[in-house]
Length: 301
Ligand SMILES: [Zn+2]
Image 1 (cartoon, rainbow, N blue to C red):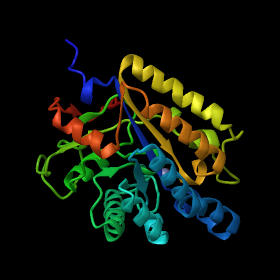
Image 2: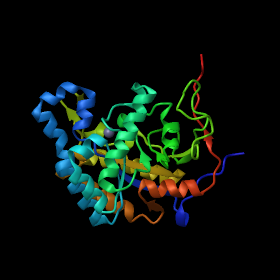
Image 3: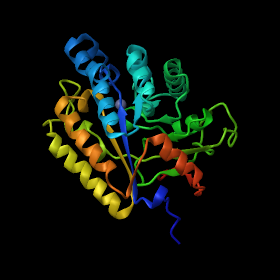
């Protein structure tokens, strides 16, 4: 028998969330520390927290939408006013690592350090520890779900094995991991996972950083929005949770921000779509009481 499917408030066919990864300088520095010597590259990245966030806050305000901003601790420490502005506007400020390094490439202690330093940086500015986490470069490690659950995080949004959020049971962790607690001792041992997908990210459409990320050709906003629309139409047909991700250093540019505003407005006018921030979607999911899903497995051979 098929597992019961997550349902949305007011009978909506799908949920839609607008999320923003405020990478700034940290994304380039983590990819290649030598970029610190390039003033042009640093300013290309600084555009996000300096200009892009402000413009995107205006877009969300015009459309009456509450968004989720994943902020690396490095960005928070370098651009504190930007993070205060996001929080003051009522949006969710969530965790995106400290240095924007991939957790999958770090030791357990290094992962914990990145988590705690990132939470400390955000708490200094917002007064609260973040409830949501998204792995830098969308590259979550096998150990991170348990580390998040131990620290009281409500959700992660980095995995890609479903169209709908679900409960992830991380009490078992992975064999050989010593997180400092006995198995099953974590506060809840559970985390909501809100899946994402590369097709709903602006990075693949717009990102061109010479020597760091030369994906190219840079796409038009029309091309990007058509792709995002197609996924939304599919989720209205089959059900799902449409999580769009924009980077302020990319989508904060004027033509892209204008196209995004049109899209946000269109999505809010769809009667069968529940538009919400990720913490609201995670809370709704947690309250459904659906059975938790064990950690994914791969063939041991
Ligand atoms: Zn990022």
